[in-house]
Length: 454
Image (tube, rainbow, N blue to C red):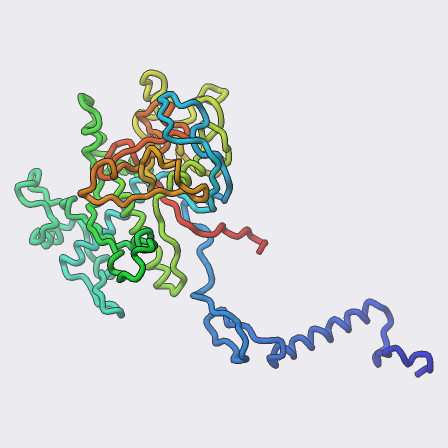
C-alpha cells in the first residue's frame, strides 16, 4: 500500500468502473440491514395477520382488528369534505325566514347514488318476513353466544307459494285469517312483518347529568311494521284515480328500480338499522372489522351533497332555470300549471333517471322528496353549530305533533319548481306515509384509496 494512501480505504476487489463499485456498496448495505432486522437489532413488526408482538420492552401498538378492507360501498358515491353556504340561494317568496344563509363545514361521507328503490327495500321486507316465519316454524339454532338465531340453511329449503308450505303456515298468525282472504287465497299478513329495533341513544348518554347511569337506560327497543303503505297513492289525492299505482307500484317488477314510497320516517330509520346489521353480520363472519352505521342524512349533509360543489346555485345543475339550453326539463316535477308528463314521467321515474350532479348523485331534485334525520324547527339555524350541524329529536308516540316534524328535501314529482331548490326546506310528520316521499342512506367511511397511490 502506498504511503500517501493511509487515509483511504482500499477495496480488496478491483473495480473496472465506478458503476460496479456503487452496486457493490448497495448490495453490502442491503445484506447488513437484513441481518440486523432478523436479529432484532432494528426492532420487530407486528404480524398483520394477528401474530404476536416482540417482547422487547417497547411500545409497538395493537390494532383493534383486521386492516380496513371496505373501500367502496356498492351503489354509493363519496361526497368529499368542504364548506358551503347553507340556506336559500334566492329570495324567500313565503318570507318565512326559517333558514338563514350561512357558512357551514361538512366532513366527508358516502351517500347512495340514487334513492332506495323498491327492489332494495323489498330485500329488507323479505329478510324480516323470513326471520318472523323462521321463528314461527322453529327454524332457529343456538349460537356460540347462547342466543337463538335464524337457521338460514333451513330457510333456503322453504318454498314460498308451495301449497304445503302455506298450509303449514296457516296454523300461525302470519297468514291472513279466512275472513280477510279474497277467493280464499292464503297470503302473508303485511302487519305481521315487524322489525325488532334496538339502538343506543348516544345523545342522551352523552349528557353530563346522565353520567354514571346504567347502560340499559339508553338502549331503545321497539318494534316497527315495515311493509310500505301502498294505499297512500289513493289517500294522498282525493277524487283522483290512482288505484293501478296502489296495486302494482311495490309488487310489480316493472317498478323495481323506481324509488320506494309509502315509507314513513320510522320505517326509513329501521331500514338503515337493518342495513347496518346486515353488513356487520357478514363482516363478523369473515372476522373483519365492524363498520359505521348506515343512517339518514342530516339536513346540512343533504343540502351539501345536493349542491354538488356549486355553493350558491339554486339547483343541483346550477342557476337559474329548470330547463337546459335545448328546452329539456332537468328533473321530474310539476311543470307549469300541471303538465305532469312534460318532463318524461307522469308519476315517479327510475331512480337513476336524468343527469346526476357533479358528485354523481341522481334525482337530488324532483322524483321523490327525501327524509332527513333533522327535526323541523323554525329557529334551528340560530343555535346549531357551523361544523356538521345537526338538530335531532327522537320523538315518542305520545309526544305532541310539533315534535314529530322531520325535514324533507328535494321536492317530488307532484311539486312545483320552488321545492326543487337545494335551499328549500319543508317537513312532514315522522309517522305519516306519502306517495311522494322516499329516502337514501349515508355512511361515515374514509374515501376509497386511489389505485397505485398510498
